[in-house]
Image (cartoon, rainbow, N blue to C red; front, side, top):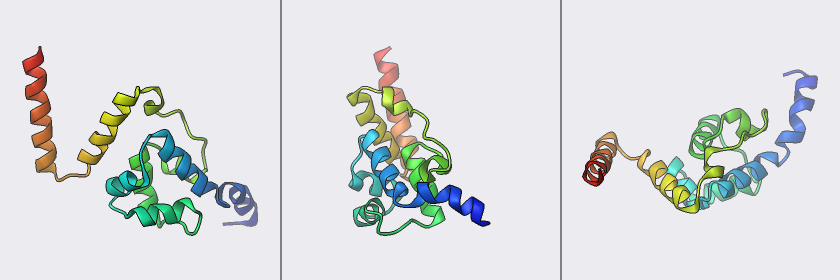
Length: 126
């Protein structure tokens, strides 16, 4: 990376990552513990990143971005963060969305069981 590219990234990386992570997590209405569960990390690790004490490795950045419904470029500050779908959700919809994010981390067999349950309840209500 040349010095020109490095200068462009410095303002967005100097603790900007920690603040973006805090802001995105808060906007999604999830706790550090919930984000840790979604990503397979510990709450302590999430706290470590949010205090700016360290930066996550690339695979963890991908996991965090996926869990927060943003791109890695948005999470890292290379691109502005677009308005998330969850910003327009009611608190109840956000609560359900968080639950679905947790289910997405389960084994496929368990995910299919949840989908079958949802389908059967939905069909019964029609």
